[in-house]
Length: 288
Image (cartoon, rainbow, N blue to C red):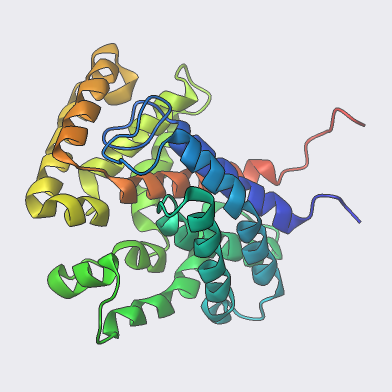
């Protein structure tokens, strides 16, 4: 028996995506290696503790995907795991919500990757197609008479489907805005950190981020989008001027209490989709 199962490798790819996302620095309004952004209840170490604590959950979701007879069955099987994972996260962070959205998104993707791996293709298309089918039943949450969460309240008030809609679309925003940046720029003369920041800016310029809407409403969302587009016009994270301005942008967002956490989760999704095929390849080992 191999020490590292397919489920373990998929789970590791999820954890790596979370670590690379939080490590990207500087991120406007978000926790990174230099600061807390617009958050007073968490920091970089909190995110590391959270990622370590919830890592086994992603492998468990992948194992469920490997055992499925049809993707429509997935949500009912992994939702109890997600509830447990939320509790583990909160225990590890002393109550801070570091990864609730990512637990939902990457949990579904891990399950989808487990399901898709049986056909031997872990490229974004089959994984996201399976994820869309798995996540579709979650849209039924919007029919609940009592919108008990921030995401459900935003849907009731503004029709924003948030993380559930992103997953049910097969993560269309991550694939349209962030994944092409990773695919086009990786291996070129840019650091991985700056590539991830560039992808984040594209997401910020185009996504209706529910975290931003909850903190700043439509005015805050418009401000974030405009600021991101102005940064991109200057070259974003790929130019000296644009990179320097990200520090000022971080201070500005922090002062305004704006944090594009939904975009950060979608960046982690894109990193996972970009990295997964390579992590599951069959390259030679130094131990051979």
